[in-house]
Length: 260
Image (cartoon, rainbow, N blue to C red; front, side, top):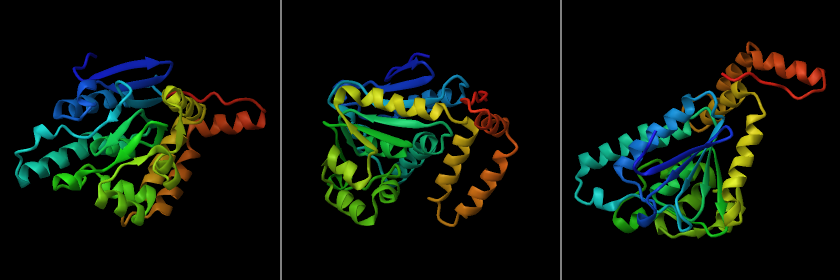
């Protein structure tokens, strides 16, 4: 499918989605969010795709925030609709995806850009990356899950400082506080992201999906995460992946898990 603001390629079994608004530092507008929903949904439904990498075009930015010109005149009701639609159609779609989605952060990841990265399962940052949630400088707060996901990733104190100051941090600081998983040279950010997805692809896809559901349950207030884990663990025993995994272990060979 051809998109106006995205470039999509499949390399091996990995779908690479590049947000392609380089002159705007890949800022998110409503059409870009709509296209992200379509591209990610297509990748998740394709049984030949084992994982997704999201990155930004050019060397300067992953995503440098939202396209402010689109919502400068919004009122409270429009702001609520903007956040609700974005959360449901893109950010929660990424968060709850049952295939790994890796953010390859190749430059500025600010505002909605950092929120996309935080919704991903894993984050790889280049040495040149700069990350932050500067919304308070606009008289706003993060609206696509930033207050929640940042706190879950880095703790209340670090989240308070980053959000309330609106300051950016560099990649090494982001690694130190747990905001990103790895920091690599700029020319390795995509290959490192693909390496991790390829490692995950060697495992049982049904077990990977079950693990994602169980981990996500730990983040939901009132959700009995331990019970979700027990149920997901139990259901694994009824899968062909379990039979193949155990047989391969006993036969001292690599498992060949069937695709869904």
